[in-house]
Length: 77
Image 1 (cartoon, one colour):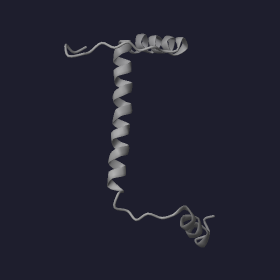
Image 2 (tube, rainbow, N blue to C red):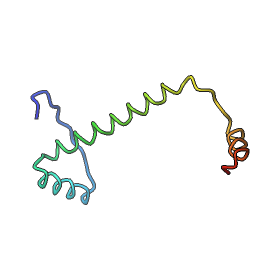
Image 3 (tube, rainbow, N blue to C red):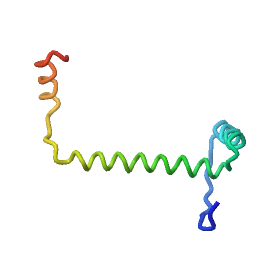
């Protein structure tokens, strides 16, 4: 772990904690490393979602009713 790491207390469901401990042991990683990686992946996914949203801001809006009508018109519904 980096010298710049910060300590936090995290409470897990006992079953989840046991599963994390087993995964950490089998992957030769610390529980902290597993949690750090999971949080990084979650935050990366959020960032990708925000980027996708930003990229679609200029798209025209369509109402739900108009969408249904278009799907019916094209035989998809």
